[in-house]
Length: 396
Image (cartoon, rainbow, N blue to C red; front, side):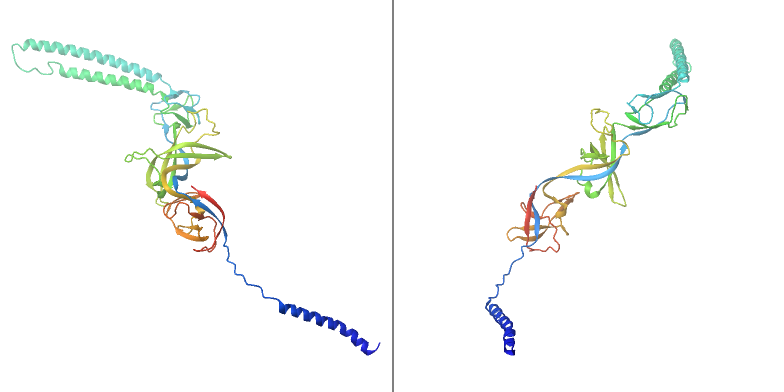
C-alpha cells in the first residue's frame, strides 16, 4: 500500500470528528438561555388552633399524707386489774362511740360506793336530828321572848349545828357521786367512732390511772395537709371565722398496683403559717368516712388508710371570658404566635398570663375571638415570617 492511501484512510476519522464538533458548536450557539424564575419561599409548615373565650374553673394540684382527724391516747382513770378485754380491741379493730374497750375489776369500787351510801344515810340522819333540835330551840325562845326582847344567840337556836349537818350531807352526796363515777370508770369506753392504732393491754394486767394503754384514731373523718404556693391559695375558698366560705371541693386520689381510687373531700381550713423556706402555706382537706364504714357497698378495692400518700385535686374559682391553651403555646416573655390569614405570616403578640396549670395556661387580655395560635415550635421565629398551615383545631 502506497503512502497516499494510508493518508486518506487516517484522515477519514479526523474529518468525522471535526464535522461532529462543528455541529455541536452550532447547536450550542443556537440554544436560547433559560428564563430565570424567582420563587417565593412558602414558609415552614405549622399547626394552629383557633381560640374562643370561655369559662375556666381553676384546678390546683397537690400531694399530701393522710392523717386522722381525731387521735386519742387511752389511759384508765382508776387503778385495778384488767378482768376483760373486748375481742376487737387489737390493732386495726373498730369501735363505735360508747362501746366498752376493756373492764377493770370493780369489787373495790362497789364496796366504796356502799360505804359512801352509808355515809350519806348517816348525814341525812344527822341533818334531820339537827333540824329537829333547831325547831325545838326556836320554839323555846319564842316562849321566852314574850317577856324579854333580846336577840337570841345563834348557838341557842342551833344554827351552826344545822349548817354543819347540811355541809356533812352535801359532802356525803358528793362522796356517793364520786364512788359511782369511779365504779363507772372501771369500764373504759370508746370516746368516739374509732379504730385501734395500737394497744398494750391483756386480761390480768394491773393498770394504773393515767398510764396510756392504747392509741385510737377516728374513723368518721380523715385529713390531708397539702402545701400550696401563695399564688394558688388566692384561687381557693378557704373557710375562716371571718369569711363564712363553705370551702372548695377536692378530689383525693390514690393508686396502688395500677388500681386507682378517689374520695370526695373539702377544704376546711389553713394552718395560717407560711414556710419560711419554700414560701408555701398548708391547707387542710377533709375526707368523710375514709374507711367506707357508712357505705359498705362501695366497690373501692382499698381504704384510705392513715399514712397513705395521695394526690389532691382542688377545684377553685371559675374565671370567665378567658382563653385556655396548651402550655406549649405560650412563648418566652408571655407572648403567643398568631397566624395572620390575610398574608399567611407570623405575628407575635403579648398576652396576660392569669394562671399556669399542669398542661394548660389560662390567658386574659391579648387575644381575640377567632385568633389562630401557632402551636408548632419554630427556631428563629420572627414577626412577618411566612407560614403554611397544616391543621387547624379549635379551643373553647
